[in-house]
Image (cartoon, rainbow, N blue to C red):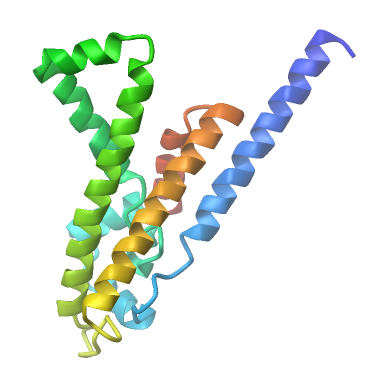
Length: 191
């Protein structure tokens, strides 16, 4: 097998892997978060087109409108990355840590921890907010509001964001291009 053929085979494998992982992402956006009335939520979002809800829904590939397990999408990770990038500039000690031999790994790990914290805050806020919402017909969006719904929702949304982050890393390592960017693109394109 020639060098060109082996490179072509490798490219083909990477392309198929990327397409497969993006397909997994799109399927996961269809998995609903437990405890939410999907029909009531959809009718609520139908009345919110063109608002900030619509923008967030677009970036999540429609996952927010369905309140799927991926409703937060990859945005908490991106926000955490931005925060740590700004902290490295603002605090020289963090900038020095980032320049060390294993500094990039440390910053990546801290960014992941920051992602979990942001997911917790956003997930809790969303769960409390959903408990207050009703569809235009007056149906409650949350079937059984309370602390158990909030805990379940927070855990589900953290797991969903971590899964999307893992998918992005796998695409970056074994696929074609930057996985996080491709996931954002797939969400917008699907929206």
